[in-house]
Length: 245
Image 1: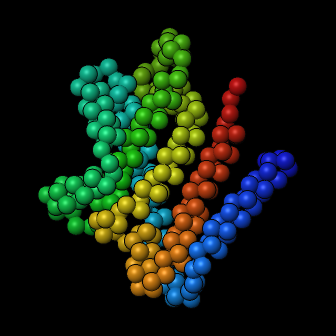
Image 2: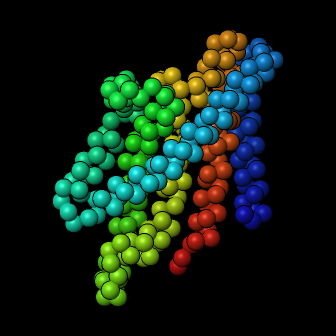
Image 3: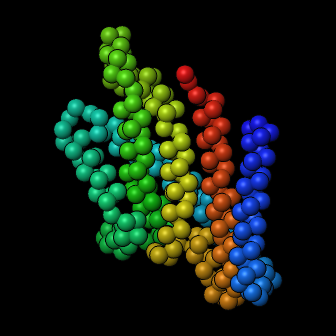
């Protein structure tokens, strides 16, 4: 980051901070931060649980997304069709609906009582459909000549994927992966509907106990920013490092 970019970023941040201060000042709101400070342990537990859920779900999302992306590229029609239908169905229905049906119907049928585990699995199933499309777009951007060259060299299809296609595809879709990872962190807040005591759920409980909404929801927004902004920064750094002509 050069000096000019840093100054521009600081200027924009100052404008946003001034706008937020003006809005909050115009509310004539009576602040009671001491009430929310008493709930700090509850909020911290929820925030740490959100980190754990997001980390586990991100690993599962990348694995399942890669499987779905590869499944749509195979020659076998049944596998290709199943993967494609799965992606379209999941992307065509809201996450909230999938969480409710997944936990209270499918989870109940399989006697899955662990809400955190169920939430992670449902989050993976949802996010993987979007991740698969991101990865598939990266694979589709690889020139056909590279596939032909791999075949001419005697590489198997698995070797072609591992050594030629995936390394290039991942570099090209890194911004999309970072964006989807940030969405995963934010989507984890919906796990509160099935009773998972993550950050948003604990914030709601703290707000209800203290009747201090802004003192609760402002820290909640900052807490999610503390998780999503580093993802974007890391992705930009990797993108710059791996950038190819």
